Image (tube, rainbow, N blue to C red; front, top):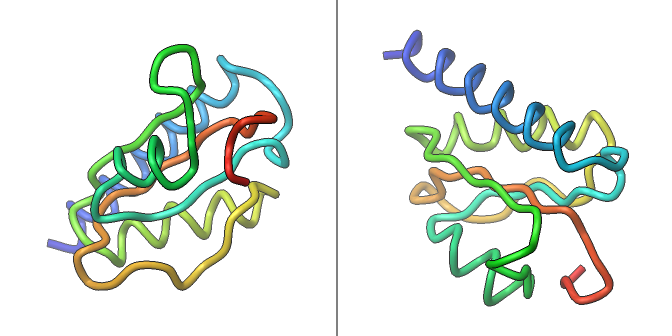
Length: 103
């Protein structure tokens, strides 16, 4: 089981890094978080544009794995903060911050 989670974490980190590079900007203009409902978090809470915005999310398999992805990107300089969610928080998400996002 831990190998699957580790693989999931590694793959999600690779996917997010590729997406961030493709969409540009330093890590500091990207926000990373964890959620049980990533679409609601992105489009309602953070006001990310579903069409035209730069955003990504992935199912990580567990709240521990999702938090590992979050911590990795926070250490690289992404905006956000640890400690959100609960045991149902199994998705990691990231988006490029704009004038219309919150934050």
